[in-house]
Image 1 (cartoon, helix red, strand yellow):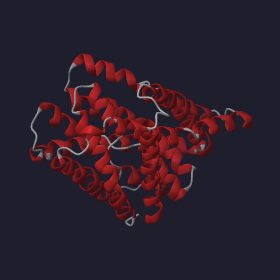
Image 2 (cartoon, rainbow, N blue to C red):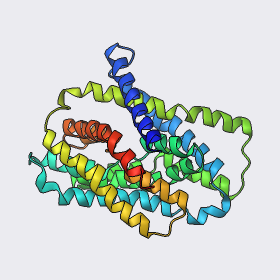
Image 3 (tube, rainbow, N blue to C red):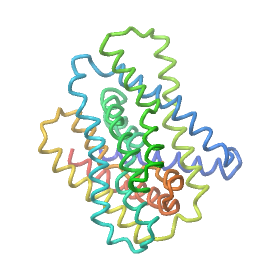
Image 4 (cartoon, one colour):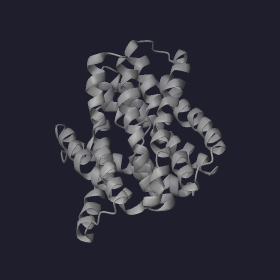
Length: 307
């Protein structure tokens, strides 16, 4: 099982490298990253979400699904609180650095990397569907906790961020739940197309992320001490707390496994972009993403042994 997790993280890093190489060779232009990212998040990812939920969740299970979005949100809330607790350990005390530190402690990689891990461990089926449902709560956490960490309670930026809650991926979950609830028949030919489009989401997103990290690589090796504190918080302290909490909760085994995997994840790759958009330290966010993702190659397989 640990080997499967290591393969998932290696796969992620390889796709990052492909993206960086594509940018270096001119196959991807610097201005292309944003356009292709919008296509991925607005088309391919919702298709992936819809297919996973509609095909793997039963109608009689819908009433217990609330556990997953609550867990996704709670993981980010715990990360933000721990980021505040460990803030005195940050050596650079600029407002931008402190805000970004709390943000990257709070916001984990809640969709693509855990999806690869879940797929390698359990196959693309029910566990993937539960992960997609959990992403509703994670999305709420990203655009509330994550943005407040960067900007405070400024009304203008918070209002802009809250508009993102109505994302097409959340709509895809709602549509899939409606299909399951009312047993709406979807022609197999249509579902095949949806699955094909959805299969593009993970590799394309990771390739574009690699290109974006390579584009901003000039600041990746600064402030090593602060990046180490983020890594310890994100990869050791938060998982330790969640392992204890999850062991005490009477969760179904598949829900427990998905929540466990989510809690182990490194910093979200999107934090590198969001930190720049909302006045944080973009270089430090990028460094935190790379550091925690690389160290996750060691930490996640070790934690998985406790499953």
